[in-house]
Length: 101
Image (tube, helix red, strand yellow):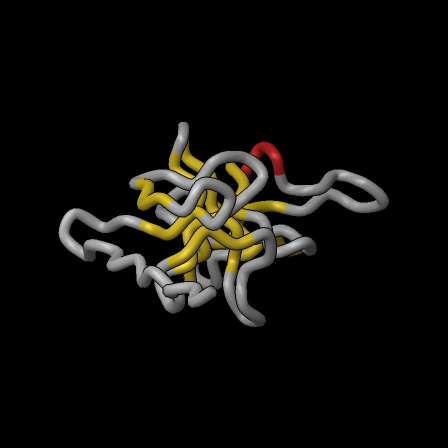
């Protein structure tokens, strides 16, 4: 028997991402996955140097956290009040976009 491979074409406008579980194109990747623009797919881990951004149902890998969000030590973008407070208090630094001491 001959098996044919079906290539899934992922639209870029509007931005969509391949979801391997059911071989579909999605606008938002389901939890716990993130939309990776470099591969146009839903991934469980963002590429090295990227941050995990969640806003509502939007879950993306991003090179910089959205305004008013700051990357914590796990590379997850959080609001300033959600920066770590133990063992020392961190705050959101607007210049670097990171939670810092």
